[in-house]
Image 1 (cartoon, one colour):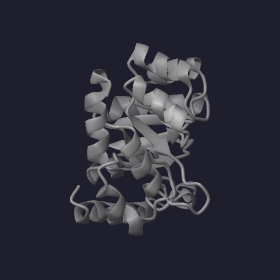
Image 2 (cartoon, helix red, strand yellow; image 1 turned 90 degrees about the vertical axis):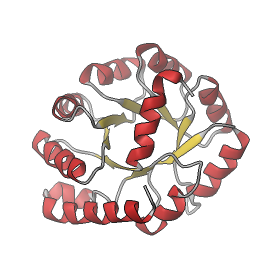
Image 3 (tube, one colour; image 1 turned 120 degrees about the vertical axis):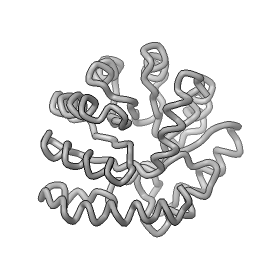
Image 4 (cartoon, rainbow, N blue to C red; image 1 turned 30 degrees about the vertical axis):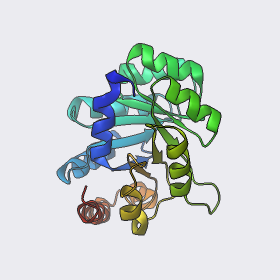
Length: 217
């Protein structure tokens, strides 16, 4: 583990459930962050969609300095620099990209590579980036993959990026190889966010909080 990122990994582990959202309204982002923090959720990932994402993240990082605000789908070092300047706590990248991972280490921004490629996991861990994101492959659940890779790469942990249902939260979080779970659907449903139905979103967040309590997190 990169020593400089140990506190980041610890906070992400504590967060346990991390919504992954596409959001274009700063006002909606503020409401969502407030609702998350009120329930003890201190991490959020915003999908990268250019300048509007950077503006939203910059505002969130200022208003919620204790919250981990990540930006996903970063594909260049210049985008990583822009994410850092906006105040992002971390970024995720599709697949392992050595240049981005090394640049993240150089500028102090944790990079989570989202991959199921053994070579990418190996090289990421070799750099000290011991947390890897994994995506569901068709109908195959991600937990067996995480446990397989976790046994093969000592000290590594994993973060499913979607594909974990609310019914499976307790089982996943019980695994020593799962650092946290990225949630793309049931925690902050895209259709509810699009309608700005925060009353229903807050009900879903209450349910997510109850799941964490049941899981002992």
